[in-house]
Image (cartoon, rainbow, N blue to C red; front, side, top):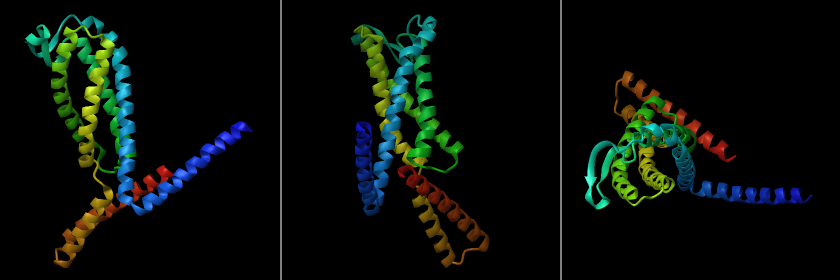
Length: 243
């Protein structure tokens, strides 16, 4: 009986919150959509960052034989860090650490991309093209974070900081920076379907009033209908996600 009361209590709270959320969504549709995107974006981003740390904690042991000294480029000694080498591509602790970290990060991104695409942004664009742009963004972000981490790692190795603590630092640095940058990257590669549909429809109506050729009109209408279909599917998915 107590268990039933306990369950009913949380069901009551959930229904109350749901009612307020629907009311807020009806009054502030754009704001509600943005909040929902931000919520799922943070949940998925933090989740894959935690996964990345767990993998990075244990995976280096699989490549322990490759950790026979600093490996990488540009391998420049840093005097203030006791001559520890500065790396952009590589790791001061060895090739094994670098391989393990890149595998952990790549695995996290392979999970993050479909989650963000399908549940946060409800995108229905060309998945292959979006994946290519995501991969390019990941490479650019990785180069920057590796360059920044290379400076930090020199001092951490010099100070004898434990690997577990170093792993947390590297995960937080790359995770937080990637989270911020990818939020804006996602806005580009996963554009709002409703906005695209309205824009395509306006372009078609303007072309119609200007007496554009029938062939071009048909292509523009087909494009507008395609975006409207995507927008309808995305909106349905968002509704069902709340329901």
